[in-house]
Image 1 (cartoon, rainbow, N blue to C red):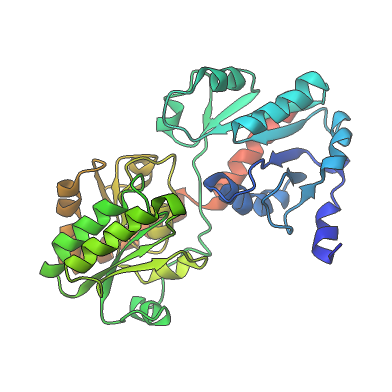
Image 2: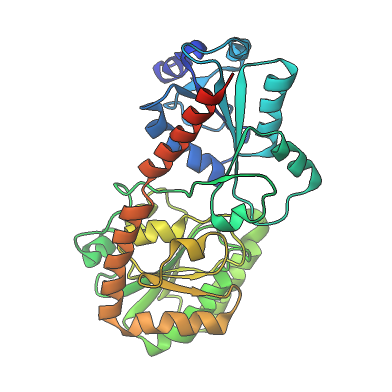
Length: 359
């Protein structure tokens, strides 16, 4: 056993007040949220994760420690189980209702559609429900608390020079870049962004475009079709497909405009990441985008409309002062309203309220 693995087992279940299960091995938006929040939360409250697919540096319960959860935690009558998926709600219900673990269960919903009957049944068994946006809250049939996601503003921050940020990535520092980041697929609207760039870049020769993200095997044909369309337009040197990057914060710093063209989204963090980097945003009206992007920092357009996207993007390509003004406003907006520490604090307050209310 490595030192890292050994440290991850050094969690005393008696001192754990909050359990954050992650029952999905593959990386997802939910997993990413857990990875970012847990280190902040663990500084303030006894908290541990449970399940695969998480970094070893996070506090982590082992499966063999589960029987210890049937006892009360030190200093409290109950602990909190924070589920974000159906399977995690089921796990919490088995512990609480079948094995009589002293536990309150919280569920976070990011879905913006009517839940299926089984999911509604599970949600009805929760002690508290969190919605990640007001739109999401509108689909819930139970009382809920809105806690919107935040981001790490130390990681996502403006560069001293966008030209230098571009040069560090091997891009042309003399050019301006519009970007679209995330998985490359129809749902994410990557084609809407590419079509808009094909229409606009010939009229704005100082601009180029960046598509950053991975196309999984089932969406590779979709990506290849976009690349072929770009090549036929003679823009392969100006619409760049750069693949997936773990240092995506560096790519935001090279941008002068960010476009979020999704046709559907649960929440969507990329507009926040861009705005924190001092970049104005054009986004579709899906997920929480209309609640994230204010009018003084960007524009919201209907999803799937190429004409609306072109009309919204073009003023940013032509007006340097508007971009700079909105970029500064975007950064200030995120600092005031969407810091990751704020999300962590709100969740901890909810946990503590639940534990204090336990009889």
